Image 1 (cartoon, helix red, strand yellow):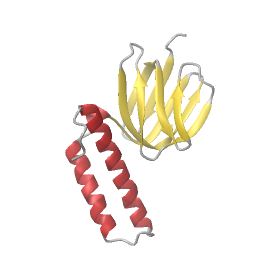
Image 2 (cartoon, helix red, strand yellow):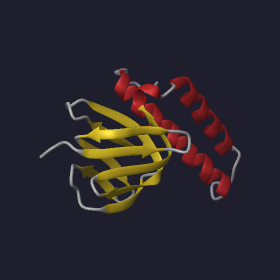
Image 3 (cartoon, one colour):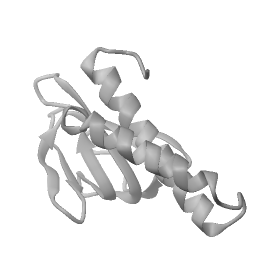
Image 4 (tube, helix red, strand yellow):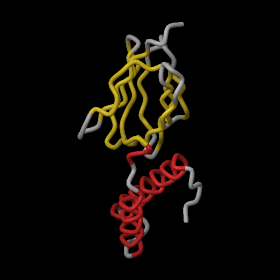
Length: 144
């Protein structure tokens, strides 16, 4: 089977990927998806704090942080439209740690059932997911 799956990953800021790939896997809200060329049409929401793995035509693999969006597979084109997305090597750990600290501080002073608490908690989950992905791909393996 020819590796002719076209992948587009788009955020409000930029187009992260727009090229042919061999395969893509990502987390939907209802479980994991593995997409190969000529996959059946689908549309699903992307997990709020997830990752995607791209297998290039030459076999190399790359991980990305993706969140808050949807995926559509149609006519051999997989499009991920995300509120946030970045390759693991692009993640700035200092920025992530600052976002984590800010979210924790905000949560400390809020009612656990308030809308603001839930937003801060979502921001904390995103920061932790970015940190884990960056550390896993940098080889440090440590979250400390």
